[in-house]
Amino acid sequence: MANVEVMYAPIVACLHAIASVERNWDSKTSTAAYGLMKSIMDHVFIVAFHVVRHFFGYIKGLSTKLQGSTLDVIQGYEMVSSVTEVLKSARVDENEWARVFQKASEMADKASVAPIVAPRLCSRQVHRSNTPAATPEEYFSRNIYLPFLDNLIQQFSMRFGDLEKQAVRALSLIPSNVADIETETAEAILDYYRDDLPSPDSFQQELKLWQHMWGNIAVGERPNTLSDALADSKSCRIMYPNVTKIIHLLLLTSVTSCTVERAKSSLRHVKSCFRGAMSEDRFNALVLLFVHKDISS
Image (tube, rainbow, N blue to C red):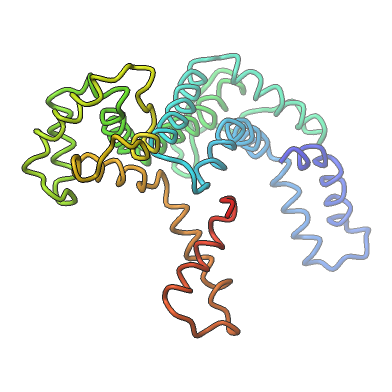
């Protein structure tokens, strides 16, 4: 996207040359070039371009991380929560919007369409935002910047709202935090995982044994992650079948659906016309090898 900003003025000049009637271009190409040129020189497009570019800078790393296959629910919750808090702080920071509008003004100046002005307002408008404002900067803030930011924060809340609940459950069962577990939290964990537990009726008693066992160990020696807790020799699956089952399920819980979608898109590479007949075990092994390329064998 940064390259597009650098090449903005040459792109406009190129489209202007194609759209010129003095050139030997056919009418259809000239008309399309003229329409595209007018669209990318529009002040609404310029401001929207920089608003999207600015906030995608916050979520680019998070988006890449969430598409990986080695992210557990706690790491995902911490990352999403951190990005959401920064976006909320940007919502009330006027300097943040001032920097975005300044970059948009510089881009408009490169295309010789500066200064940026607000579209014509009318008493009734249903096809675009029509919030009144005293200045162009205030208009674009109310009609593009703030609505886009609010929608972005709302999408984080809608898509990752349940992630917070799962992270709280996971944090409660980690040995370093198990002493602080509350009765309401324990009941919520049991209600959520009841159908998956081998013996849900004994979960409360087992949880007390789990707390007592880790309570006799120094705080610095207790595992502080889900994977370490499950791999510890003290986490006996016979003694604590329900707790270890929940930890195992939490480790398998995907933060996003990217892994599933990646597995589906991998089928055409694995099950090709040259490899159409194979056993199920071989097929599953090839898919796992293709998807999890970052895991060393």
